[in-house]
Image (cartoon, rainbow, N blue to C red; front, side, top):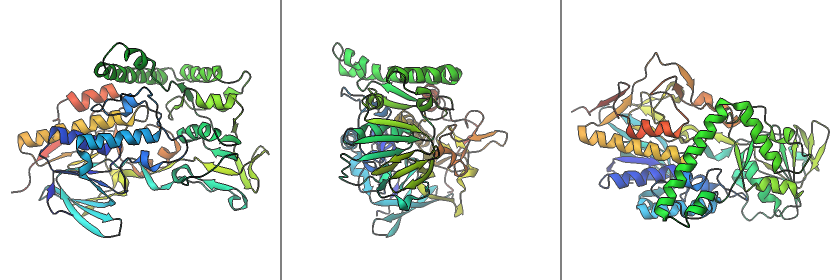
Length: 485
């Protein structure tokens, strides 16, 4: 690995990493950048997950990059389409040549004297090496690629069938004509169930508690109409902003009137389900909308599968596995040939990279997030964490733009580092205001956020747009400096 000092090192070649590298390359073509990717292919989530029906809940007008307009008619697309889009972005922007595959970052130590990071990397053969960078941008996502959240159920060894976790779906697995039980009610389960139902004998979704599920058009109706009368260069930004504004409006409405909004979601689901279906039991959670993520069913695929009798939903808890399937606490037994445990992700903050400052280890939980981008007390480091209530890429794009503004400020004023300095009067709040299981299990190891600007992490694109793109880069909480001469 080269001994040259990089200007920016990006960790992760998924949506965030490719987008960040493309923006930096566009604005600073002379800067030396590299992307380290632990796997052998780019794409992150969209290359890792291979289960049937893998797709995004977010529309491609906002999941896609602002710099690369989405031109195809479908707005809710599958994983392979997203992966192909990412490959095109990497090639067209010149970012593909900067990616080094099979390189896992294990640790990074900041030198105050040299104002640079020394990064320790392990390759696929187990060999370690180091490189140096002035700026570290972590685009590692938020969960482990090698482990998933997988609770143990009593009696699993007695089950005669096969148990699969969606994160590790077997290649070319044939489930035609099989009886399948999917455990879970989150986005993965809502995606898997109707896709599996196309070939399986029957699919049962077993959930402890329901989720809100919304019928979302697979093809955007505005895009369909506008594309007939306007050029594509106009259609994309118009439809993109339509999605941004509507998503923001409905989120704010849901948070202001949660009971009414939640009931409205349940009523809409009832309209797509057979008359007399127990919607309250299976589609009415005991939490408010956006306390956990609202799931999307493109063109109502889940509701259609239920109406056709190919899918059943059972809301109950598991007593134990038995040879023929799963015994519930209600006494019912669900017969199954295959059980899919869509039980969630294992959150892995910063990709498990061990950070240190001048050789002293950093405890992530002691840090507070600055502008949702940097961490208090840690110089020249940015992490990308997307929205919980909208497209991940919307926030990733804003963070990439902020990094470029910061680099430009360095260049114009001769600075070598920037570090947020925590204000002891700022109250602490959880980093993520979200009560999904995977978040609650990880809060202890995450940084905190504050109760006011610039330490508060807002889940609002319009507010973040002003903060990251237009608000002054300097403020009392951000300290700039130069290397010791």
